[in-house]
Length: 164
Image (cartoon, rainbow, N blue to C red; front, side, top):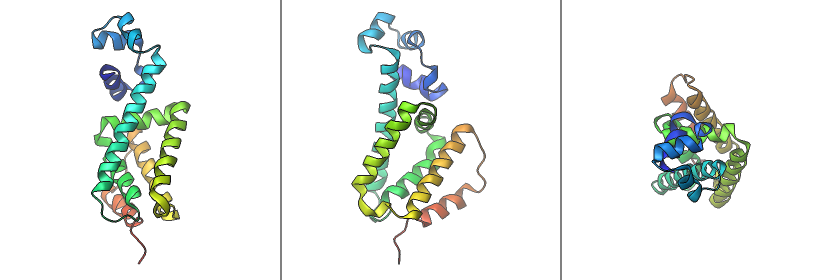
């Protein structure tokens, strides 16, 4: 799985092949199939691991934020702006974009996570900030330039503070 994750990070999940993973991991094809019934099960396992890592990172970021109102969205925006520095985050984002199975898994994960946050994350400004954060990740995944990143980040974060 480590070898497959590295391939996914370096070249995307579509770069994973049984032969390439087996060679990189130093196992035979039979050894590969001992652990995974097929290539898709390995790719799904890698995606799920990337998603779990993202969830853990979000939870950690949220734990350091004492204000419940907008806590998830602030963490989401922070991670979106940090994604270009994280190969795991970029691999996750590319996977979500390119594979309909992972689109659905991401949407389900996101909805379940949001449901646990309560009403604090439902306002229009919170939803808009998260959608903008998705756009940041997409831009970074394809190598687009984002002018004045710090100002954009500050603006989005300002939309997550509690109303006065």
